[in-house]
Image (cartoon, rainbow, N blue to C red; front, side, top):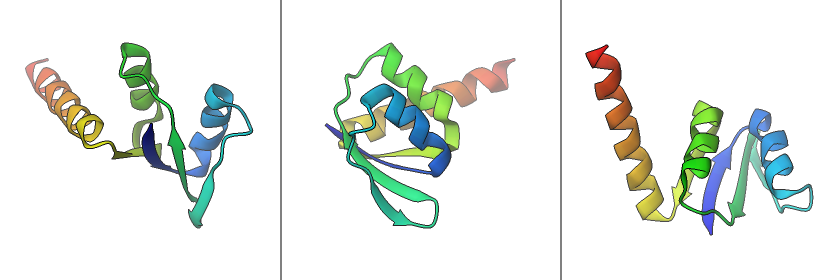
Length: 81
């Protein structure tokens, strides 16, 4: 399970992936929280990168670290182009 914070624009994508029965908590204006089952896979990371700044991984810490490392690699690739 992983914890996420996201905005309203990401909600439909989350519902499509996990179903409309997914428990989502409203945190404030346009901010939501959900705890979702995930599999650390290329499909998961494609989904995260597709959502760009509309979603934030809160836990577990190894996914947060991996996301940061992937972003750093992407930055280095862009600088080389």
